Amino acid sequence: MSTFLIQPHTRLQEWVAEEHGYFAEEGLEYEFVEGFAGSSRTTTAVQSADSVAPELRSGAFEDMQQGRTCDVSAACHWAVNVAAAGGAGQMWGSAYSVSPSGIFVAPDSAYTKPEDLAGVPVGVSYHSGSHYATVQGLEPFLARDDISLSFSGLPYDRVRLLMRREVPAVTVFGAQYYILEQLGYRKLVDTTFVMGFLIPETADIEDAKRYFRALEKAQRDIDLEQERYKKYWLKEMPEDVAELVDVRRFGPGERIVFEPYTKEMFEVTQRWMESWNLLELGDGAADFEKAVLA
Image 1 (tube, rainbow, N blue to C red):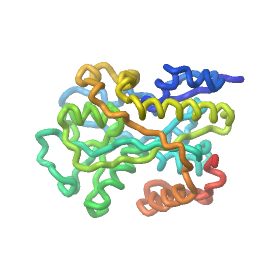
Image 2 (cartoon, rainbow, N blue to C red; image 1 turned 180 degrees about the vertical axis):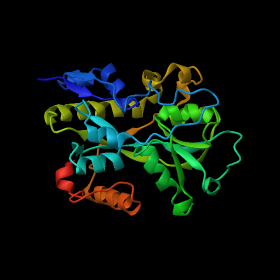
Image 3 (tube, one colour; image 1 turned 135 degrees about the vertical axis):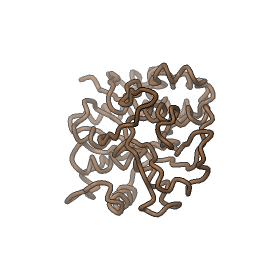
Image 4 (spheres, one colour; image 1 turned 30 degrees about the vertical axis):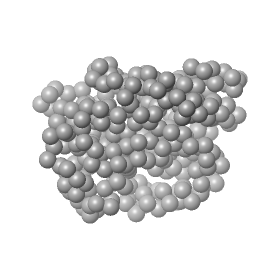
């Protein structure tokens, strides 16, 4: 049996499964690897206090297109959906997760409601969950031409940029959501969204099943005693941010749902992305049977 390479996703489940030996219990030989989804300790916005945020036009979708060096990874379902349809791997069809997410502004910001964000660039990651969630979250409040985005790097980059007032608003999820909430930043829109799992063609499907069975056990533990596991937020949190917060006050974050990602979900997602011209889907992009490991 080869080693099953797991790319964590700045959430609790993998660490809880490791603590209780659930991977080993399932007979999975595994290793954690860092990559785009687990790059919380790195930054693309190391700047001076008076600098301007860069525009970074590469994100989760591009990372998956280029090929991830792991056997399972996660990203927003929009990006995984289209990456899988384009042949970058297959989307796991028997589970997905849901992550708390929101658009935040500074405590002293003049923006107090979603409509105030008309024409205001919201910091997001390009072709990633924050990008799509922001568009979807602002869609009920603003005309299409009034939704403005700035592509401001990875999740912790956006936390730092908002804290330094280098961007007027940001979309964050999971740990970063709890950080800004705890520090008194104001949420103008809830943008909670779905995450998907990407499995490359080279992965051992039986190992993937072992991985998900272990996560299902970990999810039950978190549901029952989330307080016991909040320490694991620190596993993927940079020290400069960790020293500002008390993770015991965080919520449980991303919750894995062990239900099918259905053909209807797949097709609705593709139609919405196409309606916003968010990605060129190409011929055969909506082929659910090829893209999803149902």
